Image (cartoon, rainbow, N blue to C red; front, side, top):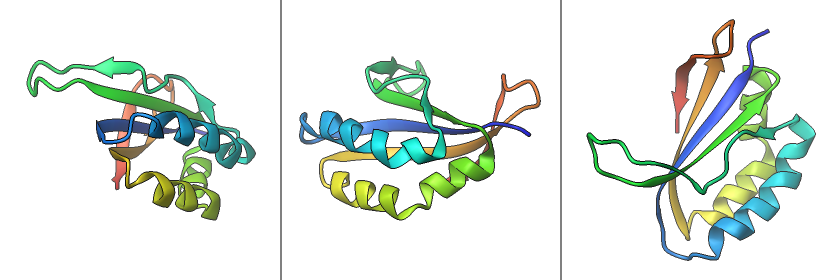
Length: 109
């Protein structure tokens, strides 16, 4: 079974205390789904095309179905509602390749 991934890019943060609060709440909300954080928000991406510097988080799950279930869970919905006022982010849910080295975007929300 192919692994599932969340790739989250933070475009802006209006309250600098929000990411830490979010991280503290995200761990227990995602732990039941076996989430593994491969990167943290401090991982920055600065694409030359856009000239933006965005904090990026990559989360790995045992399957795409598990990643989707975590994303649609009530615990995660509460977390997003709580944090939406302080940070602007884009999430992409992806299914890994058979070698899990290439991500194939399936849903952008």
